[in-house]
Length: 352
Ligand code: MRU
Image (cartoon, rainbow, N blue to C red; front, side):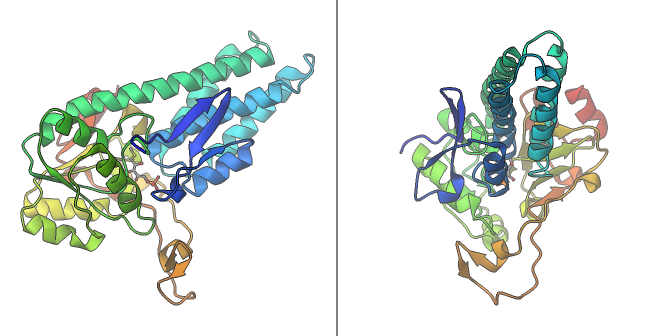
């Protein structure tokens, strides 16, 4: 196992690498229907904002293709529209915070609307599959450009802290924050990466530490409550994270625990970076206060992989994300360039 990818399109079908089984097992899962894909997104078999978007783009296209094959030419247009709308709703409601999911589905909806009355049902399905492939290819390019823009910011570090997983498993390419780390090392930087474990589901331990290890990048995994101590000991000179949604003013929603790293980084005088593509920006929202934060099943906190770590009836909070205010973000790294000390004017200028 030398290289991991989050998803693949094989013989006209979407397959996902089941990330819930990592690092122990490499299992590819087909998505024969919408219910299976929705379950896979909710259960985090595919996860990471860009990867969810790419998967949804393929998912709605594959569903349209399945339906188109069953339709009589006469009634096809209306039936196809109904199925497309149903698929849109089923997928867009699977996870509320990562805006890339809605972005990809809306891009497919625009594609659909742009070809109504021009293409037959089968041609429409083929066109949506083409669009999904474009979204996929574009994400690879976006990651690479983010990596180019972010790598110089990490070049002089001897230690870099990160959280959750923002690598190949979270995107279709080299990753966002992880991509910057990877590119900096490719260009000769010599640092150790300190990923936080990222409770409750351990994406940092299970996925990021694995990706770093496979890439041959020095890694020291830390539990989430070690971050302040690692910073105080001056073991890291930068913190870099991804994002699930960035609002017009530069506030960034990301995996729960990101905000506390930003607060700690400010206290210790360490730069805090967010890396994300344009598809993660939601400039319709003025600030992060307006972002819907996904609340997940309480049992994720009460236990891990079926083993209880507390009494089964204790109350639990389980927000999957938090919002880091723009004032704590040193810079947002995008494929278009770096937004230093983000403000609404700077974000809108970059994203217009
Ligand atoms: O709940 P997850 O595992 O989907 O959360 C993922 C994250 O928070 C990532 O940091 C974010 O999606 C950026 S991915 C490049």
